[in-house]
Image (cartoon, rainbow, N blue to C red):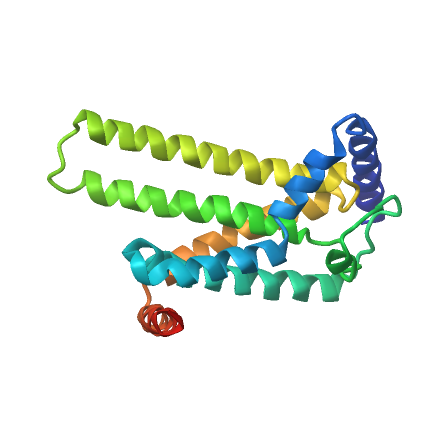
Amino acid sequence: MQRVHDLDSKISLWIHQAGARIPRFVLRLLEFSGDGVFWIVAIAALACAAPSSPQLQLLVPDLMLGFVLDVLLVASIKTIVRRPRPIYNKGMYVISSVDHWSFPSGHSSRALFMASFFWLKAASSISSSSSSSLPPSPPWASLLEFVVTVEFLALSWAVATAISRVLLGRHYVMDVFVGSILGVLEAAVVDKFSHATLHQALREKLSATTIAWR
């Protein structure tokens, strides 16, 4: 196990040093986009807008569930493993710096959760539409192309965010790898749970709550 840790540390340091020429503001922007506080605000904004959009009413509870699941899993694993961050890690945000543990990467799990979640939702919508009486017309082809393009951009952002954690010196490669796998699994769990009766009740409760806010 120590040999794996040493190899992980060497590779991570090499990647961190190799990315020194990348503008730091780009990496910090990716860091901010995957930060938990940013996604709390984003999901809250979507919840406020949900009453006016049937699509958002379906998505917001899933996003809330995924975010809570991610926080609980990542926090639990970090508390158990307690792997320190790289010694060359510098300049973290005040909120993020409170989290001293490195394994797994929460930014990576959140980013891959979001990309995987929207991919599963898009695939489900496309499958439902294609199985209906909808003919393969140009508008349908354009919609499919749009969905694929957006999902490609989302996946590119997620991968870039995960890699930036090593480039910034926040995490080791293994932290990012496990965090990414965790995010994909979270998306799969939330997608399966979205069809459960309990989740339907949660959706109705959250929808009623967001309407009350307005």
